Length: 255
Image (cartoon, rainbow, N blue to C red; front, side, top):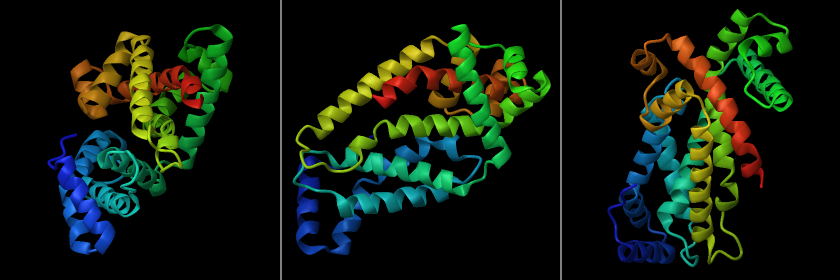
């Protein structure tokens, strides 16, 4: 996340804005940190591409950036881009959720599937097969696979929310914030290591889908071409991968 402004210049602008509340100074700060919004829009593309366009998301991000400028406390030992990035990403996730574009039936199926998957995983000590999941849910394997394909986006958003909420304690100023950024950076580093280990436990197909979807920012249709399978199959693989990752990360996030 490249920010083209020095800490000294940033401090100067914030001090001027704090004293004058001049809209022009605020806008100068917003423009100086607009790259934080661009980074957030790019990094969340796969979350919103089916529900909104980049312009809508950018507008939400810019509004969140303005809000971050207004609420930022210069007395605290925190870099503004760190504070703003949390506010912006949280605003984007909230916006996507409020669109309510995922049908209730799909959301309900995704929730039931996740509950069943967790129960069977605990019972068997391994990833349950589609046949076992279908039997436990009282549906055919074909219906299960169609449901898993439809639930891919819902599972992606739920996983992103769980990961994002893990940093919720860092999203607002505390009474004692001297170590705020240090603690958050340590948390994010540890979380990244935990996530990397969880991904490493996935099978090869699941690793490929997660890598191409989250790191290469490819769409499901593009991943299908790369892997030589149907888009529906990619969505099914993604859904199972998300459930496995959520199981691996849940206890850590709740700590």
